[in-house]
Image (cartoon, rainbow, N blue to C red; front, side):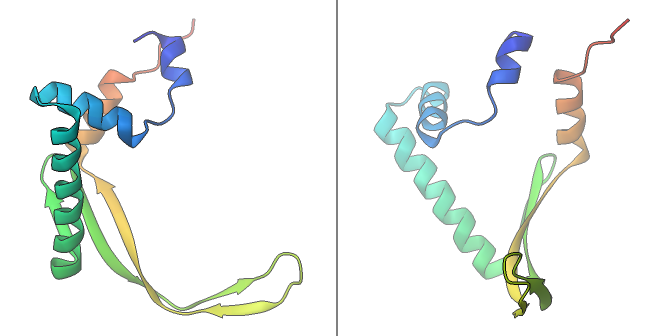
Length: 110
């Protein structure tokens, strides 16, 4: 991947991810889509049951309770109290960070 391609690619659509995932597993697109849907459903169910899912060496998904807070409507300046609610947090591991720092290391400009 060239430096120009890295700048252009900011995200990937689910269909493209499933296609690459399917090719990597040597299965057809429909089978890959079914596997990805099951993984997503399983991750969601585990988060609801356990509140934290750890993939050591990669990342941690965690549900935390967000505190009640004040918010101000920018157009009317009306102050509103937002209620406490659960929030999904994502944290990557140091191994994951180090990998991406090595792959996307900025070139020294001299």
